[in-house]
Image (cartoon, rainbow, N blue to C red; front, side):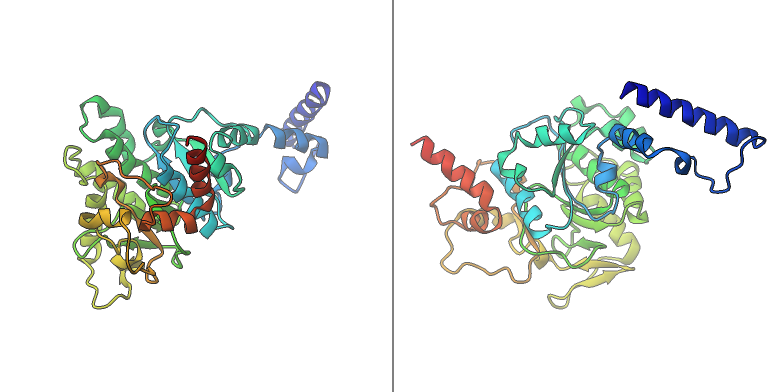
Length: 342
């Protein structure tokens, strides 16, 4: 293998010199790769890095992230990712984790995924490290990131999460979802924003193409109006401010979606049929279980859950019904673990 690599290297040097001189060797195709033996290509492909840019190159990924160093996410996070993988089987589902070690090969990624048994069986789920200093390069967020002191930030994990989602959407495109969003059915639009309520635009679910100008405006607004000490100011606050500037606050006269310039603006029912003041309704038993026919996914408002409520098998609560249907692998894993501890 080493000998073969040396031969290929020498061949590349010879071709490069010959192409530059244009005296003793002429090639009209313009691609040096067309001149290389096939074995050189084999070596080159093996040397290529396994990266999010490759997996998400089509811009159709479903993006999740974890901005803390924790490597044991709660079941709601695993359920959110699994539900997306099931609803979007033909699209890559990427989970960016700050605590994950560098991944440079497909084998690295497979080993990392083995730490999460409920996710490892899904071939369209991928894990990638979240490196903010690299992610923010060549964006309006980089000067802010270089100056900000995380230790002095009251809501650093949330503020950094706000920044990362805008940068991820700018770099990769696709659909971004918070890790407490359980998918029900595919979102039919590729370019959309979603209303959280009649006065607020959500930052928990959004869909854009890579390098879509709107994502750049989000990053600019994030920096220009930075108030990290105010809850929500850097997330839904950013998206709401930009929307108001572009088209005023869209008004819904029915459950139909509307437009904001040339982008779909989705009704609150699409992701927020249960509003955040009523978040506990996910953890109670319903006499008549809602169908959520007007919803594509459900946001479970985990930031409100200071009581540590979780899904309990056998409780017959709404959240248990959602787990059983939308993330059965996660549900089964919890069920087995409970039975072994009895």
